[in-house]
Length: 237
Image 1 (cartoon, one colour):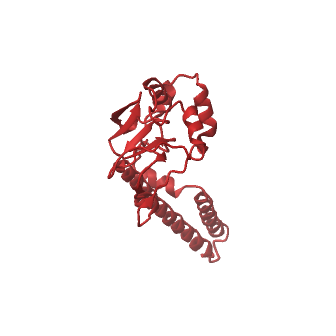
Image 2 (cartoon, rainbow, N blue to C red):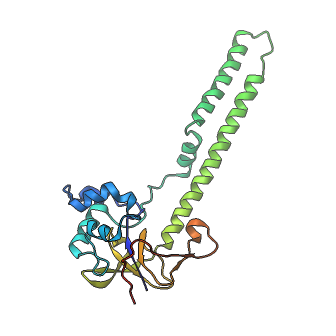
Image 3 (cartoon, one colour):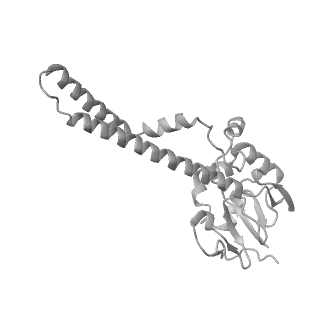
């Protein structure tokens, strides 16, 4: 059996939950807003005190409910779906692609001016060719960005499927099985062999723990976890 402390999820919170949350913050929430990036190296006992949690009793139901209301659900928030044509147009006319488009238009204008003011002379087709080449490069770049964006979205969707639906936490000194999306910062989670991690966590007690990170980091072998957060962490049987 392994136990670990949720140190702060990277999953995007629900915007509606944030908007309806109370404006007043407790001292621990103010501290958390400043030092959230350093929770993985903060002294463990001091961290538990700051997060109003305990390695043996976990969070209280009151603190957990307050954090859930403020920070939102522990789940992915996907952007609103757009039509394929709109996505493709956005990827074509993005960033430096606008400069390529303007350069192409300038080449066409130059070719048109030459044919308009010098009708008796053969217009130099170099400007026309360059303009067409720039347009081809523009749409090829947009197509590549469009395909790459679709691949990234599919990867994020795959991570959503990797998330377990339920997990075991310790609250008010008792084990409880809750929805994964209801896990909050400071929760003490219990995990056994074969289970999947339900949040971004910091391990403080483990016995022969190996984590398979092939989906995240591409490692071919499981990574051995050695909790060195504190020399006084609790040894669970």
